Amino acid sequence: MYKMIVCDLDETLMNDNGTLSEKNAAAIQAAAAKGVYFVPNSGRSYTSFQNDLETMGLRDQPHQYSISYNGGLILENKDNRPIAVNAMPHDVAKGVFAAGIANKQAATHVYTQDALYIYNPISTDSDYLQNRGVTFTTMTTPDFGQFKDLNVMKIIMALPTMADRKQMRADVEAIVDPSKLAVTYSSDRYVEFNPAGVDKGSAAVQLGQLLGISADEIIAAGDNSNDLPMLNAVGLPVSVANGIDAVKAAAKYVTVGDNNHDALAEVINKFVL
View 1 (cartoon, rainbow, N blue to C red):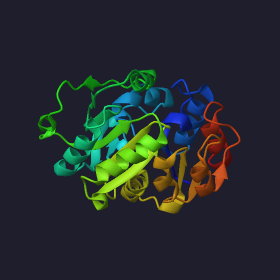
View 2: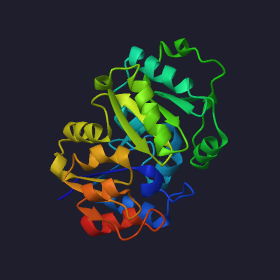
View 3: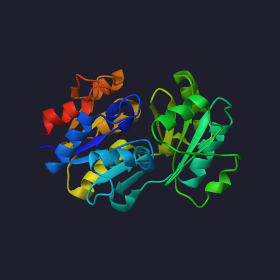
View 4: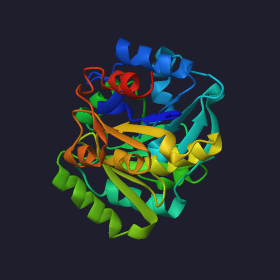
């Protein structure tokens, strides 16, 4: 019996327009009523999906949980109470940021525990974020000192092509010891940097341990490379139909429907209800 579902949001649970379908919401509510935890496991900040938690019936609920920042932060939904904070060391974050701002094509995102700051925002990226309810502050100075007293959860760069993103990874790793980084790609637009050992999979297992749930009792659903760590860590890894080839290869089940056609309702109805 599966006791927890950890699920990516963008391009997995959410439609392309950033909305949550009625069928997905109803299935999540039914799973929760059966005592199965439904845990958003997103690269985004928890602040950006509170309205979606409301639709799921999980917003501000005790003993319900969310994972943000690719595993950087685990919260109990009641009062958004942190139960695990896996922040970047300041010197590591500073080096990643330095590589990002050196590239004039890149929109460099700095996610603190509670807010998003972007240096050099670009319109295509900003439109994508706003479509998903993500708010941010534009950085007017490249001085990283403004974050010295804040938890920096992750730093990511929006770049137009995968070749650009891979070059950014190389640029970062020329400054920061690669052994100190966890690097992933997402949404066909981002290269993402977390501290080593922190990813969606490690956070899913960490939360499971806190709840007395083994990895074999967890379902994980995703579509992109930053979801691979959680698919590789759980008992039932699932790819939505629109998942990249590597995600489909890692999955034990690939949905018939894509993210625009109630893929998560399909998973919940098949394996939980």
